[in-house]
Amino acid sequence: MENPTKLVVRNIGLILSGKLENPILDGDCVVAVDGRISEIGREQDLDTGNADTVVDANGVTLSPGLIDSHVHPVIGDYTPRQQQLHWIDSCLHGGVTSMISAGEVHMPGRPKDIVGLKALAIASQRWYENFRPSGVKVFAGAPVIEEGMEEHDFKELAEAGVSLLGEVGLGSVKAGDKAKQMVAWARKYGIQSTIHTGGPSIPGSGLIDKDVVLEADADIIGHINGGHTALPDDQIVCLCEQCQRGIEVVHNGNERSALLAVRTAFELNQPERVILGTDAPAGSGVQPLGILRMIAMLSSLGDIPAETAFCFATGNTARMRDLDCGIIEPGRSADMILIDRAQHAPGKDMLDSIRQGNLPGVGMTIIDGIVRSARSRNTPPAETLPSVVG
Image 1: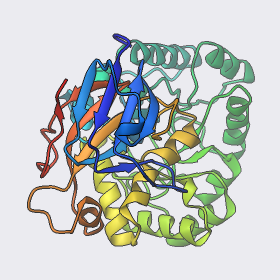
Image 2: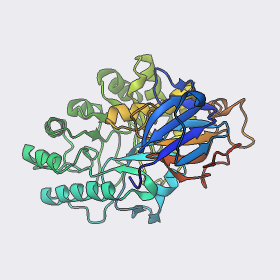
Image 3: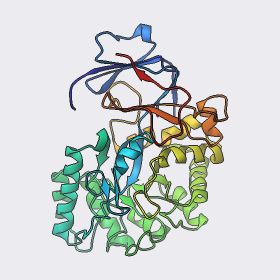
Image 4: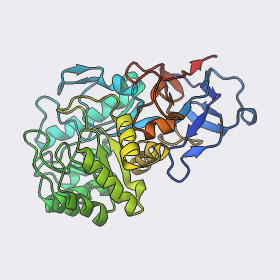
């Protein structure tokens, strides 16, 4: 953290909690101290004195900062995949305050020997721990497993601070039995795993079908709607029904398959398994508004309340990934966004407008209780903007 501060966000019109069981909170004020939420409720009932920063929300909605559960960073705020600078900053302007790496696979000359892949993972974890582009939290250092890795390799990675595996299947380990053994070793040492699902995404990757996914038993069914090519419908339904792991749907996948997977999760009464990612940077490029677009798509075409769809990109991911952000409650990181209905958008309010398929306008982002950006340069302009008044 730069400096311990006290932040007061007052005059909030609506508070989205990020929690499926109670997606809308009663209150008009949130207080954060030293980068963590301390109080939520009505302003007259809270300790709002001696604030370092006061934000007047001017009646707009406060949401947890969005979490992109599936990105492929490389180094800093640059991606060689699309030769693009400042893509993470652009995503911040789309409301994303945290990102989770599914492998730094676009690094030119990515090492595939065991010593090299471990070195890259540790270095990646370190440089995003030490440098947050525009304040965005990037949880990185996700090694792609290769043939020949043994249990001690996972132990060494964990001891060095690595807590994620890159997409299983992007390396030479594509058979279910070998993947299962390595995923189990990773889990033993507290490393969470994601498996590639569907057809090849880039040259060098391969098909990972339902049988491999089920046998490997990774913690997250990565892009169940394909990245980009989805599995057949019956395999997607089978994965939802026969596996209890996370159901990740991504922007850079098959939209119809995404709706099928989410619909199946609801039929199983397991909406808490649904999390959202973009799978960017990729061949489709970078989508700064990708998470907001997924929320609007699932709400409008999947007949899901907008406040519930926001939980897929916030609290669901935070709980599944064991993050201290993503939910508006005391003790959590004060990572928040202030959003409103876009100018001239239909709908009686912001949630209704999203339900009709429209994106909201982002008016401000806050990470660790510090204002990181004002009106978004990427979303449609919001009807009403918050302002820093003290």
